[in-house]
Image 1: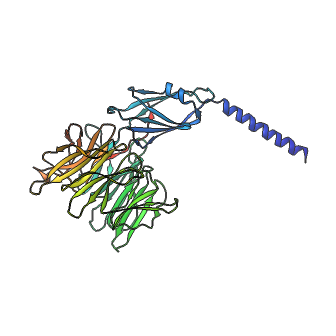
Image 2: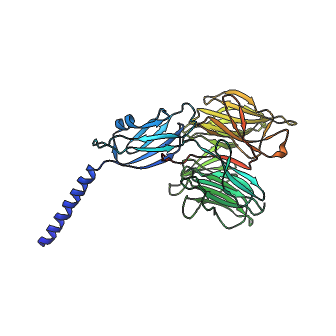
Image 3: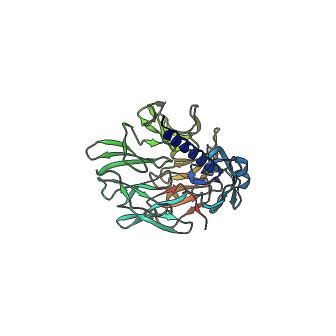
Length: 433
């Protein structure tokens, strides 16, 4: 072989060894901090480092202000910081990340401002169109405007925006995605599809994917999965009702004539599991694989069932009242249902359920009725339930957002009418001032 080739190869090898040694001697860096689904806790972040970190050092040097207990899970370069269920979070937290890597090299400390609380967003009437607003704890602040009255509002599971179905023409609905930038400022809305629609059902997962199940004027029903960026993927799915994405993504719950089917989505291998019976999926839990179902019986009673991986549904409650919504905290640590009873004067009740079976408190929400077609959702950071109600004494005044303390039953009605309202998952942390 030509001696020059040997010299070139030797020089390249030496340069590679030198670069490797220089990289090893460089201090570790915090590359990324991103918000993660809470799971069984109250809130969580993913920390990504340039080098495997020493867990004992991170646990000792990491700080939260105001002080809170935290859990640090995983090993290596990707770690999960989780806040276990404890007292309510009343405001943003200052997060200081410091420690050493596996070779003892110190990490340059970084301080971030993290607000783990979900944001309350609403579509609010404003003439011929609706405003998209955010509640800051004292008043509504504008996020943008819709293309018409909002029939449906679905938050994107990654916290980066909302999707809405507008109904300026009842026979020509439109689906729009309204994104938010890192500072929660609105970006230009994107219309999803060009055809006017007769109906549209929306569902989102924690990665920000959006499932749009829609029917056109020509009678064609389509199901498309829109990623956070890029073109949609058409799915060959048919259901007897609204199809729901699992929060973790990759699978959907498809209502069929004789039960509920759980199906995988591409690129996963095709797989289908089936739960027979006249059941509706009512709500998912933050912890994967757990959900609440409503079962309909031939004698017109309804029951609420608890579903967890590898086990048959467990009945928690059965009765003659209408079950209009449910909500779940963590892996079933808190379970609630909204019931309606009575004909002349419907009575709205909040029922506390027990995961092992049985019920707890039943609280009547005096003078309130649930806005038809709306649900119940839980904020684990402030331990409050969100619902949309009207006053029975003045139903023409429109519906309002209501925050309920499930422990005391105290109801706080927020000012001003809303068309739709929901919790938007918390955004990731930013630099601390």
